[in-house]
Image (tube, rainbow, N blue to C red):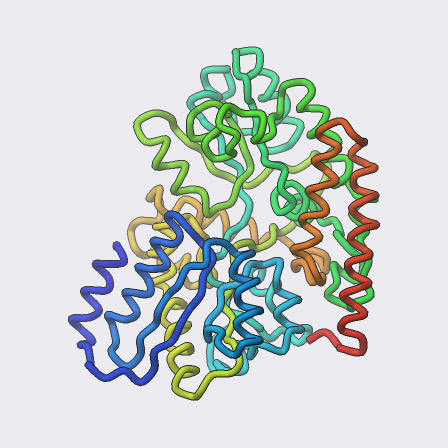
Length: 435
């Protein structure tokens, strides 16, 4: 059901009161189809009740949103609801600027949230600091049409199988068997999670601010070295190597046959493929001999900011209750490819009679991927200044792809520079205990 249809039907049932108890702002960082879905969801909330009004305001990107939110909080004009990406979790937890969502909504069945989505935003006591919202995880997509042309009838499940498929595609004339933008969330963080690898000590920082990076000693370093070598062989292309220079365009145009990408990209791919190619979507490949663990939740969650009155808080709680409804999660998932975040939604999809519909293709796979066996190192990343670290990691690995240093040196340099960030962050919050 479309958001507009849902809103109209609900409005007829609920009626609309002219009174407005609270008028609140919600800042989000998405654009494109996701922004359209967020705006539609906000319109639906305003339509089904008349007590509150929410103004949903896009900030262009998660990073810009974070910068504006910090400035807004200092100037005492920040919104009450803030969508923050996964990597900003610890910064928000220690900022003193937010109210833990579970404190304000103690009666919600928070344990109904998928463990892989919940653990990223939990305190050490298992209490949620933020409400998971547009949850994504990493999935593996292929252009089934192009694979079959090259004689590949089975979707690769391991990296070894993927490279064999890439060789066949290259032999069949493909200039781009597999494409990646080599961003850390895809090729480093999600790779480490599903292979059960630590990114940093102290279980990725969950057990203390004195953590240090250890990723340069794990299989993640070897994997990146492999990607660099496979690129030299013409089996892997960076997004910058493609005709468009864009990861998604390289895949949707048919130039590249395989890629790892967010579940949130699914609708972009299916719309572009319609009438041209057949798509497959599944879990991301593993190296043979390694047990599969849960992938991290990506996307973002919603925080409640301090500095607002009781009526505004009640309005914020009402909106969080609204977007948590199974029918809202289903509509959002169908419109964007993002993964539902509570276990009851998968049951609702199965009972809807549309469980096999392409619009829900990422739901079951995404939930299954985030529900694989977890370890203390696959809960998430609880490290300070992590957005800045991602930039450092990218700088160093791009030098390796350019032939200026080996990938191992890149990882060693990123570890050293990352540890310096962690020590500065630790000093800033000296004496502060992790929540």
